[in-house]
Image (cartoon, rainbow, N blue to C red; front, side, top):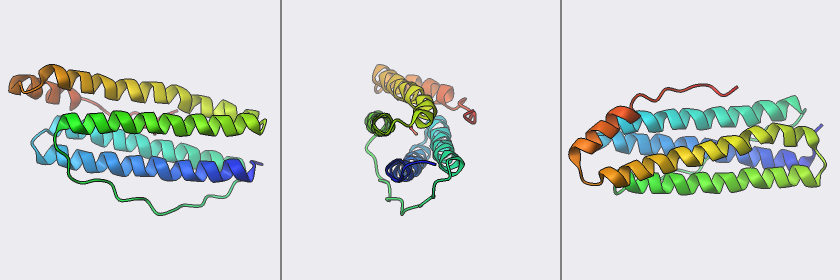
Length: 167
Ligand code: FEO
């Protein structure tokens, strides 16, 4: 059985992952609207990943005989200035999520919950990948800058991303 403190923190994390899904889904709509369908696909896949993260926490809490308490999801932004702004915000958001995951690990260490520490290890590694992936696109965007041909090619490349369910 999981402690109530960790249960509350995981319920909070489920909400944050679902908010991340919402945020990236909103960004995908903006990217589609400004004529970047490949960027939009990339962000839709990211939204799917966030949903899968929420489900992973949800399933884990149930497995530990915890209680799921779903809360209202904040509305995400709908207007953005540019793809670069989107990826700057996304990179920042992922750093924020990394902090949340680290905090969950800190709680599980304080509570000597070794099972939770083992479970959270997946998310610690995942966040390294998440931050790197957003930082990579941001760097590519800075490279192509106002070059229309470069943007066209980057859009094509990002549009090849496919969702792979986490194990
Ligand atoms: Fe669920 Fe992008 O971290």
